[in-house]
Image (cartoon, rainbow, N blue to C red; front, side):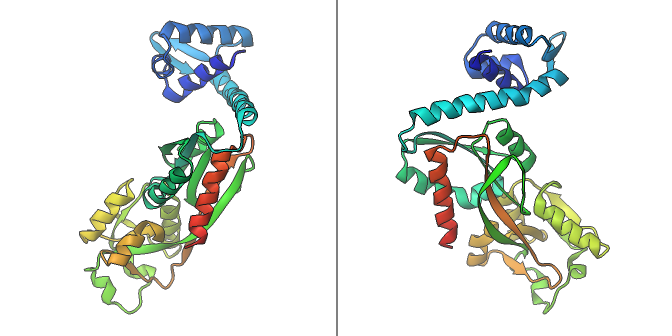
Length: 296
């Protein structure tokens, strides 16, 4: 069982096709097909269902995927460990939520590459379920999320920090003239919210549901930057982590509504997989993140 064949298998799962995997790896499609046939013969099972021109991973392929990921990860760990002199170098792959990437990563990556120019950083932006799959399959080295405190048994928490979740509006919102606001006062206002599986949207919706309300969703947008533009145009309210609007609050282009019966804090969290070798590049990145947030 060759490592390169397992990498090919993993790339097929990642891209969804033999052709795309071949293109990504620089192989001919016939080479990819041959590698998979040899792997299936060695294992004694079919890993993919072949129906005409369509190929899809089957149950046995999904079972084998977790073993392939572990074998590849251990091989990479051994290579990195034995060839490392303690200096950060190579490639650092970070999986991150869009809102965190926009708010924090430019400053941190700038500092990181000033100190460690021999490291190439690859940023993969996705939802938490997407990033979770990437970390478990060895496609990323660090997962940076924002949520309630998480405790996955197969991950190690490298660093965490806290940030409040706030209700945000335009400086022109008439709600700013109210002395005291409760959830019932904003329940029927138009809201511009992130996707339904977003942790802080779920928490806000649950807070409203506990009072007997559901949010009046005017717009649903996956981009925090677009949400802020719509808020500045006074098209509604939103619920966002404070860190995502820090510069807008400072410039007074957005304002915070104080809701007396809504007080929520969540945590930024950096994880790495317990089966992964922690390279100097990973250690150095975590140290910079820790230093930046400790100084705030």
